[in-house]
Length: 355
Image 1: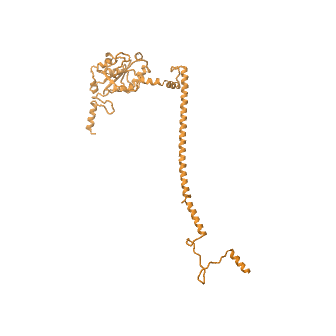
Image 2: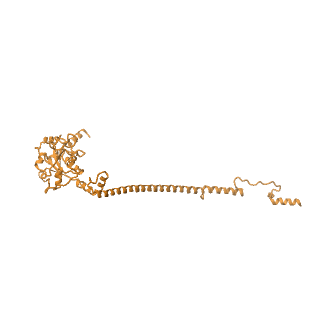
Image 3: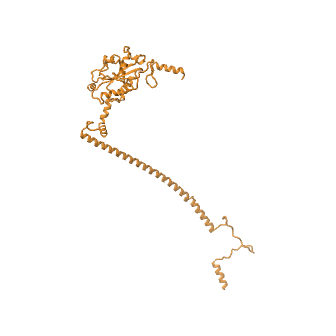
């Protein structure tokens, strides 16, 4: 990339485009608002929040088009409110959408206190202090308003110099007959966000209730008393028996799995030994046939031995290594077989001598 191309791309980024990572980039030299330090966000009554609020020129009204274009001289102050009980990813994504809605945004988050929440909506799992602290440590939050009101009015918006209010577009009628955000929607100060499907405080509580016995048994095993968990004596004993049964069942399953693995290993070894034995038996049979078969080495040796014995007993003139018998001299020129020297010839000679 040439130097001119790099400079032009950098210039386009300053004019309001988004960086490759999806986060806002510097706009007209103002830059995205960031807290001076990396600590938790300040409360609305603390010095850092008060200084930021006093330095804001609220006489300069900012429209939605101006805020989106980034053509503003100060950070756009966006307000989001809620209960934020059991702070989860759905809350974090809502705050992220509000923070990244404009290139230069100062996000203020209002949290209702316990008394107002219990009266208008119901009991919470976390108390107000815990909910305040959870919001303070979110990376998207720049300021936290404690004891936030249930419905907004002009006095509250001017006090905190709020330009836009962020919430999902569905009418919120809990604790009120009308939509609590109807006021800001009519004034064009509403900034819609999208809800995260599948996750909400109600969903999380429903999961806990669904597996209530599991979590009670877990906490009992970790040292909590039945009184601390608001569990009766009979239920405590029943849950402990059930917990012991589940442990025994788990151990039994482990032993069965080990036994199954052992049997599979033995079966595998048995098949391997059988295959080796089969290969060896085939090799042995092949060697046996090679040695003792019809055309084997042993048969060849036996046949050769038989032939040698047969030739030795009744040799033939044509056999190699055997010479024909020599002929005795004769005056008549004809050959006569030699006299027999057997047993009967000897007896005949003896009888002739006696006579």
